[in-house]
Image 1 (cartoon, rainbow, N blue to C red):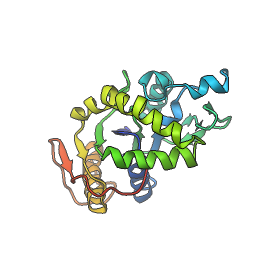
Image 2: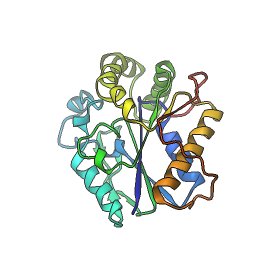
Image 3: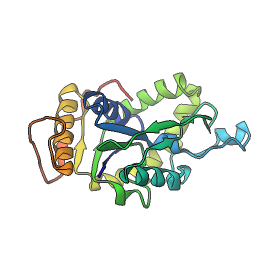
Length: 231
């Protein structure tokens, strides 16, 4: 049966970067589901209403669709995941096919925070990064990729992003088996090694052909300075 690994942490902490590093190194055994792609489609609303949408609360996620897709994957079925366009706050017409490989990584702000999803998760990893660096990355991403103004990003960061993170996401760090508190290259390598070994323990065989390094307690990796420049 497929195992599910959840990567959570503040917006800009490096979740997507770490997920893609794992998938790149251990293809074809790992696939990725981004929680961001499961934001609700706002195509029926005006642009002014879409601009006011609070994307930093679990209620903004189509939880039922996400849970259904992860459940199907764990049952050995392929799924058609949505693709979200943050410039328009809508889903693209075509989705993305995800195959039922041995491990699926579920990465996103609310990877630990959605009722019903937790029961499907086999390993939880939390990225605890410096909020200043997270903000810098968020600016680059939201301005360059999502078409937001710098003023909008700054306002939302202090009025919405940080308070919602403290309310919905940070308290869930206590649930993580692995906590990555820095994103230097050394920290990243340690995190990948430990995640790899935990995955091998879950699936019961060394399909990644790596050394065995299993720690049953919560593992904290790294300091906090400096952080890798990645979202």
